[in-house]
Image 1 (tube, rainbow, N blue to C red):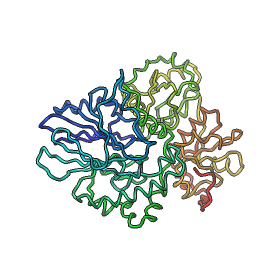
Image 2: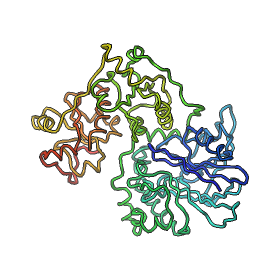
Image 3: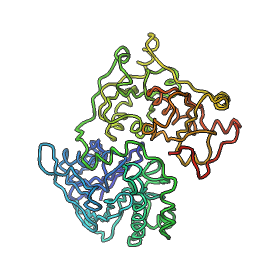
Length: 488
């Protein structure tokens, strides 16, 4: 048996290529949309992808299952469990007409890829239709499973959050019943051998849980002993309180991913081929009509950028930041180093931001500025100046950290809106006042400032964020009680 993890560091997402070396057949579980990576990896190891499976309808990326069905003729294995509202609706919409070769799975169903047997286990909670796959190497003589491709059910050190149908997809009242379903699912782990490996769908940094570990693989026995969420499952009410507490705010694009993965992602075919702009052509871009994503460092962006540009550096949060600040119907222009253009394109198409029409380099922005072109700056102040602005009432304070961070302490009078949810809550912010924006260290607030500036708001970034505020011995932060100030 062959198995490789294909991991996306920015989305902390794992896809699994599993192959039978005797027959040369392979399956990919939970692929992302740019499937050329899986096809190349399979070919490099003497395999051909004949099947694709999904653990559930994903919220954090666009699935590549339909893409592999089109490009490789792979047979599709997806869930038929859960309620009627969350069924796959693209299986009969093959490009050119017809139905994709597929099998709808229920709890206990098995199928084979060569000598590899996969058994579907219905594991609801994160989503109603969620499956996990027990993998047994029958071709190698095994009569017990080696691993569980657990999707967003069991992570290393955590469980998949059960609130997303409510907090991301807008189904009011869904999270409490989902948490109770997840509790019942967790109790079913006792039926699995403790030696079975856990192959999770996400690692540390994913917004699909709150405390995911950075170790890529675990075992059922280890997680039962040391996973805090599983250990909390001894009493249902304790578990429900634990699993729903302090979940991070989901990025705004999650709702689009749920919708598109259910209806069927647009078949990509290939990465976008954006036009290379000169400095003169870049100067003619209207960054209020197209989303101009500037990936340069903060100092360079703050000092001089095209008016209306978004600051979204190519860090680990690039994908979720772009999904939070750029609409899916917007044309996109990139400011990016040439050697990182493909990286940015892949990141964007994985969340459905396909309309990348053009790109330019950081050097083009510098040339534009030297030639006297229109550039904007973004105000930033240190703690002492910020303290004066707050004390004189000259600013309204916007804290763009997570609600759990905000609850631990904040600048007095601050309003809290997580930066990943900001675009949906602009009406909460005053239009006639300058906003002093802070986060933990200044990065998230810088992204938020650029977005707000694009929306016509007056902003000032707090350099160094709350770390600098506290380190400078500013007046003690006000601590949250049970009554929060407009926390989201």
